[in-house]
Image (tube, rainbow, N blue to C red; front, side, top):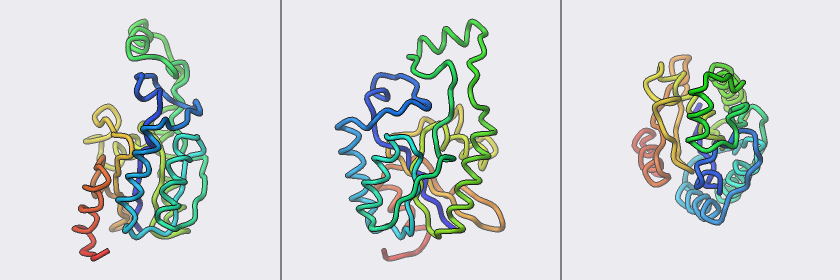
Length: 198
């Protein structure tokens, strides 16, 4: 089983540095262009199904990808972004001040994020085959951190918008093949790994 994890395209909140959690922020014009370019590049990728977080920024990205790849699209609530609690919507300096004051933001634990994401990816890949899933920075990073033993992901990796990470199920375990790659690099790496002429 193979899963391509893609972070959604750019939003106005991304550009402003505001922390997006469960807020339903759409892609901006730049995000729509980037999603379309990502879809154009990844069109040759052998994928059977596109799954998306229910949030608009992910769904808009996923719709563009599913249309280009010519495969069905479904929404799974478990692919949603981490709930950042009281940190949501804050700018970096506001978040730093909040945390420096020793306040508890009430954020969703990263372990819980990784658990729900991996359950979703495992079930969707078993049901649909080769999967492309569109999600969010913190949620994807929680998966990368879990699968890498903390070498990458949460607290270490700043995921780019429309960046691609790939997981493969080998030896009874999910493993990270590559992560945070621009679409053109991701396609190149996928071809090298699979020895495929797609």
